[in-house]
Length: 88
Image (cartoon, rainbow, N blue to C red; front, side, top):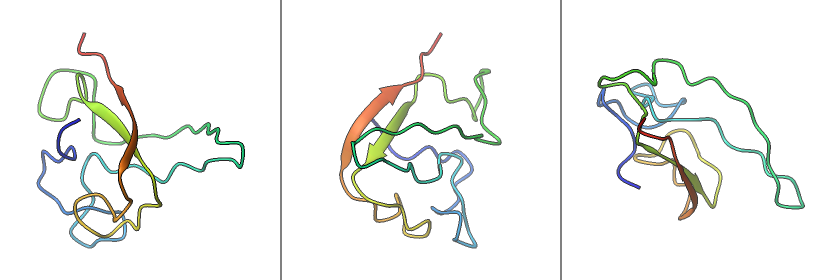
């Protein structure tokens, strides 16, 4: 995975007055058995071609909780899982 998706060059975090990145997502709530299911709406991104497109980009899960303020990834720890939005 590459850098945090940030075509608008904002700072990280929903609690940051200079944020958020377009790639900022809410924290994923994981159950004690290690499973997680979550629906979310990522505004201002698209699957259509263009600067705000997430096609071909990675979705990364970090080990810790995002503080929604610290650049570049909310002091959320190392990357522990990754998926890719297909490019086509």
